[in-house]
Every structure is written in C-alpha cells, then in structure tokens.
Length: 415
Image 1 (cartoon, rainbow, N blue to C red):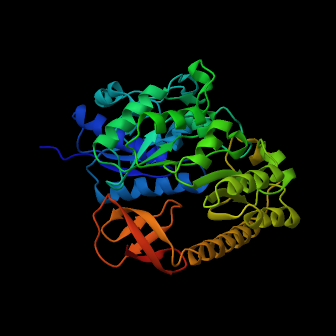
Image 2 (image 1 turned 180 degrees about the vertical axis):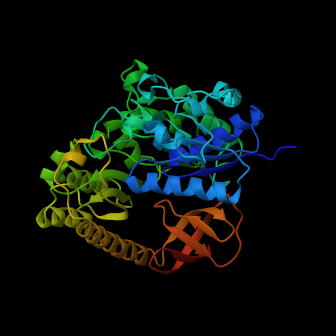
Image 3 (image 1 turned 30 degrees about the vertical axis):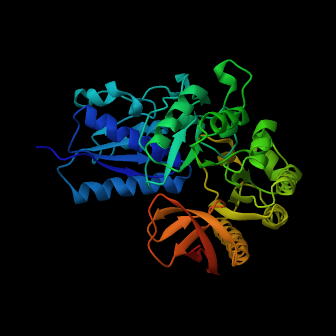
C-alpha cells in the first residue's frame, strides 16, 4: 500500500492555499509515494532554497519520486528538469487540474503557457494552518510589469474569481466553524474588471460582509494602496468585521526609485493614504513590503525609504534585499553592492523592530478580541500575536486583557 504524498510549500499564502488544493487532487488521482515541492520565485534566493530542498528531500527519501511545481518551476522548468533528483514538473496552471495529476505517469511536458490562462482556478479547500483562520483565493496573476518582478511570468495575467464563487466558498467555511477568512491573491486590487462588469475589490468585500452576516472576521492579505477603490476604503473604515490591518505593497520611499521600479505611486501618495485611513479608522495597523538596495539606490534614496517607515506609521515590515531576476529590466540596471544591500536591509529591519515594540507597548492595559490559533496563542484584529496564561478554546474569539509586551508579542489574561 502506497503512502500519501508529502507536500512542502515555499513562498506566499497563495502557494500555501494551492498546496492544500493539490493534496485533494493527488488523493483523488490516486497519486501516492510522492514528494511534492511548491516553489517560489520572488527572489533568486527563493529559487536557490527550492533546489536545496529538492536535493535534501531526495537524500532523505531516495526511492520517493519528486514533483516540482510553483512559480520557479513555471518560469524555468528546464532548470528543474535537468536536476537528477526531479521526476515530474507541473506548471502553475496544471497543478490545479485533475487531468494533470491523473496523467503523471505518462510523462511529457506539463508546463503550459501561463499567459494563456484566462480564468482563476478557485479551488475549494477546507482551510489550512489553524482551524481558526481560512484563506480564500479571489484573484491570481498580475497585469503590471514592475521592473524588479518576475512573478507575472510565473502567474500570468490578472484573473478574478467571480464574486458568487467567493461568497459560496466563504459560506461553506463559516459553516465549518471558521471565525476568520483571509482574502488572498497576487494583485488583489486588480480584482473585478476582467469579469465583464464595473467591479472593484471594494464591491466584493462589501458583498461578502452583506451576504455572509455570520462571518465574524474578514481580513485582506495585501493591497496596492494607490489602487484602493472608494468602496474598499468605506468598508475598511466603517465595517468592524473587516479587520483594521492592511499590508501595503510600497516597495520604496524614494520617488526616483519608485519610477525606476515602474510603480504606480509616489511617496506622498503612500503617506497621504496612511494618514487618511488612520484619520478615518484610528486603530488601523499597517504593514508593508520594502525592497532594500534596488539598482541605482543612493544613500539619500535609501534614507527616504527609511523615513517612510515613520512617515507612514508602518508596523509590520517585510524587508526584501534586492536580488536581480534574469529577464527583468531591473537586472540590467546598475547594481548596488551586495554588502551595502545587506546593511540597508538590516537597518530597515531594525526600524521595523522598533516600530513593532512601540506598537505592542501601547497595547498594555487594553482589551482585545483575540482569535485563538492554538490553546495558548491568538491574534488581535491588528494581527499582533498574543500569549495567554491559560488554555483557551482553539478557533474561538475570546476577550483578552493585555498585561505585558515583548519585542514581538503580547501577553494577556482572558477577560
């Protein structure tokens, strides 16, 4: 009797979501005794780690075939086909197709042209991670071509999941007991136009909140702030069930670097958005992606990005040391020294760490609704991690009084 496949996921939440869908597809196709690695391609380091993990998997289970999929496999399938450890390569579209899993044993190329994909697969899953929070894909792909980014070539053009499909999935998950749903995608604020109607992400969010009244908490994973539509802003600032936490795709705080990145906003746009949102909803918490050491970035340009952390009032930072990706315009620009990039990334992380510690310290004495991810740990609406003194029901939302704050988390007692 064959053993079930072993799945490993690298990269984003969307990848993790799709891994859960692949588990069901592999089971339905009767595919066992496989090691499946769902790769990321956002940086050169991510690709290196994927290859390193493949080699380790083969050493640990030399008789177990290895299937590689995900963005790195989609962008450069030949690099993985050449690896002696790899038996199968599946493209990002094929990995969610039952037929692809059924014909694994037939061999052949199963990496198609992702740019020909015209619809989001929207696979149904029963959640992943904890039993408290579920993720729902609402969009895939990206129509923008930021000069540093390889992901559109791994994900294809933007495709939206129809609102009715999203709502039905959320109703099903709420019926299974999930108290929080996180909407996820590659370029969330591009949701809607390809559905043939004058729709934006805010329309979807408002429809979910209206038609799923028993959903306690809705969260948005990440947005491009310059594309936040009026309906989304209205929902974020008036609907208490929409969590006051936005992760922003900012990438830099210097106007020249933003232009060279081919971003759609300037630093003042980002600052103004955060100020206006905070004025309308004072408890809102911002995270952001920032790249350190983009090509041509001078010390002064980097200083503008560093100041943006304070000027936007950012809390949760994702800092990416720039790494060139073959095939992107930024890879052909004058590069910043690697040691300088490393130093700048460390300075950004230090600034983010100070912001987190200051934010957490302000929570002492407050009472928050906390969604329990395990018996002793949960999350506030602002996504701060809370440690409880006694066991609490996993998956439940409890009232917790914050009694202390560390560098990265809070301590509390059940109120």
